[in-house]
Length: 464
Image (cartoon, rainbow, N blue to C red; front, side):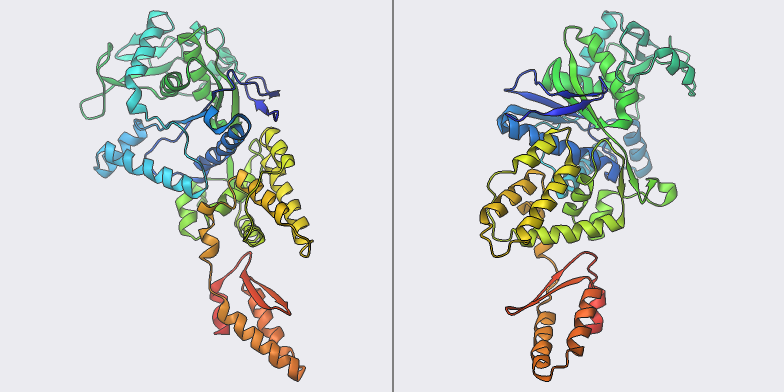
């Protein structure tokens, strides 16, 4: 069996992964708050943990992994969006949840086994909060229930911060009903104009942090294997999850391995609306950038390193993927390359795995006369293992432009040039095609034209 090694944020070291129960490996990843389109930063953890999900299923079997990713469908941002738009909250969350699922499918992400919505688990949240109050880890104050940070001796161990340092560094106004500035909300009151549920503390709604603790407990138990998300969630969200879960279920471990992906940049700068470089996944898809290209760019950087999205990378990825699709046009997938699997098993080294695919593709292309059917099958299976070159993602390649008329014209010019020995017209047309981003292949068998990296159909108008 392949050994998997993962960098555990909790220990800050790379550890050999040993599941609690190999017959049911548990993976929980924090999902989106559904009030708008998913931006590129939201998409990175989806792709990262999709690869981990695929790896776990390969090693332990597809029926022995339970992948849970939640939806936060009650939140102040959602309430604000409803007030701005005049639309019902349930309509907004239903629409944006489906947007998210559709956009992530375009990136080749497999659906998790469970996708709980916070509003479906409010009774479990209330029960967990009741237990924390009863055990002295939480207290009610002015319609709120707050977690008492000082009651948890282990608070700060995940993020590596001390409570004293966190209090000293706090720059927010502290609510008067808090005993400690770092105490966080488990339950808050709801007025008649916002969603609310009955509770021992009055009509209200849950705080953000309690959601994931209650849902992971309900679906994975008090101890499970892996918890993941972006590193912006490490503190306070994941730290608070740890604290309340540890205190609610003191005999459990909660999550044993913690994985956090780094943030995304755009053209070397932090993605920001003020900088004009804020993109949703749908923005890029609507611009004609295929989801497979976006996925390839994401996977080309290790998940624990900042990822820089650039237009140049997208063009290069499109050219590479077009070549790879042509390479396996008649191949059938066999089994993935073990070297590639080992690279992914080494803390999800997707960048190394992409490099391995490049090397395999070069070897196949360098031996056109050799019977490479088996090698092509391994290459295809390896790419599909990473969620690339799949049938679901290949439509953009076959939907490319019809270059037949230009191929026929170039073939006719070449035939005439063979007679006249004047190849100037051939060279001129070939140069115009290359300028438009078309790959030109001329052989005794004929002329083959394929759209390559940076293909621009508008530049073909000069040839019409």
